[in-house]
Amino acid sequence: MTSPKNVKARKMETATRSWTAKPILSSDFTEAPPLQEVYVGVLKQRKDTSTAIKSISTILPGFAHLKRCSNGKLLLAPLHSDELSREKGHDISLGENQLKTQLKERGFDLSLLEEKFQMTKVPAKAPRTKIQASEASKIWPVNFHPDQTVESLIDGSIFNDDCLYAIERIMSLVIKVARLEAVGDERCTGATAIVDPEDGRILAVAAAKIDRHPMWHAAMLAVDLIARLHGGGAWKLNDEECKETKEQTDAIEEDKFGDESTDPNVTTEDQILKRLRRIKRRYEEETPLCYPKSLASLKFPVQTSLETQVVRKGRRNNGAKIENSRQKECEDNAKKCGPYLCTVLMEPCPLCAMALLHSRVARIFYGTANQSVGVLGSKTILHSVPGLNHRYRVWSGILERECRQIVEEIDARRSRS
Amino acid sequence: MDTSAWMDVALQKAEESLKAGEVPVGCLFIYNNQVIATGNNTVNETCNATRHAEINCIDQVLKFYVIVTVEPCIMCMSALLQLQIRSIVYGCANDRFGGCISVLEVPKFYDSKIMIQGNIKGEKAMRLLQDFYKGVNPNAPESKVKKGRNTKGTSSTHTENK
Ligand SMILES: [Zn+2]
Ligand SMILES: [Zn+2]
Figure 1: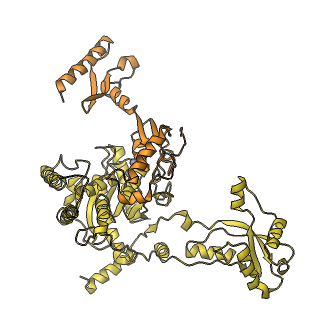
Figure 2: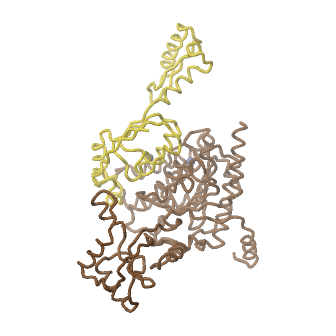
Figure 3: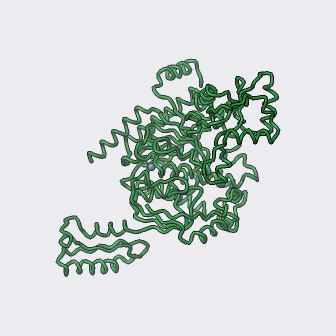
């Protein structure tokens, strides 16, 4: 498969790639770390450094992300104590004399330090990235251990060229689909493909059709197509267009009924295995599911695995290797979009973004920003909002120029009609 | 569905129009064998040539308001806003996914004038959720029982009016 010619062709592709996959990270990773005001004691003699550090660390622990002493200056305490302020209900700042008394009471040898304390600003939080760490250490030396996963996201090394090329081919398909079929509005439009990253199989492709149903955004349709693949599905997609599909669906319904006829609340291992086997079979026989159906006649890109270095193990649910303890989990996954990845033309609206979150999609790649209601970078970063129970990773900028162009084209088409 | 019986009702509406000096057209929206909207032409009454029976029904169904025991999630909130729902009344807050205020304030993206009122019989709604995730219900997902969604005794009490 990898003849030297192919390799060369791919190299060419790398050289000419017009886009970069930009990770959409929470501000914790992208913004300059905030600063806080602190008291600093100046050591009279450098030889006392280690004694002073040891003493202050036991008396006033903290500043774990910073070197406690730098250039003969010893970090003593923050000017504003969060703890104290929370107790008193308003902002309390610590006076210099108060601090001196505190230190003396707890046994710190104040004679190690110059009489007058200094006030300075230091990074308030531990840096999360190399870039932040280097910025922070210009202000005060930091303790920092880079997270390889985070760094690979930022520098793009998480993807190799094969992977990027595969993503590009899927996005090209999404663009084609959007050009042919998408009917959206200025808040959400375009097309979506859902892909199994393990073998790169395109499972479902859908174009927005809000002229047919107000909830038929591309991602909402794609999620329901996956549900159908898993033996469910809520919307009767394509049924009006294709009698064959209807018959197929009926057969599936029967099949499902046969499985669960005894007691819907009890699912035996056997039933789950049967179900998963059936899903597997459908993977091979029926994918890609398309809405509208006509998309099935498009030329689909060849399958390439999209797995990257950072992949959780043992999360597959294709039947062959499930263990007893994971039955329930597998079954749950089979109702959702498991570890799939999702390629969308335009940054999802809250409806689509949250639908993909509920469906446990693992990765989202989008082309162009959605300035009006996009929540994966434009209006907010949904996957960094605290409290949510699932987080996907998101990249923007896939074939960005082409995607933006097609969004404009769809807009123009809408205003003409 | 007995279409001819429903048509009788629609005809009555049309007759009302006639009496009122309007073009006699009546319209019904039926869902699950129940009338959810009725309308007749009101072009003269309103001096508006678009006020056909169907448009009047559409306005009626769009005027419905939503009563839901738990604050809608971000997805549903977005869907409801796109449908231009006027008013939402919910029971307890949804600390996990809430799209009114708890996790993300979705209405601000849609510059919407939707009325939202929360904490109406919130405790009861919360108790149902707690029972579900405690595993009283055999269909409760196992993983979530452990995670204990919304079980921190937070029948959060806020009333939103926007
Ligand atoms: Zn959408
Ligand atoms: Zn919801």
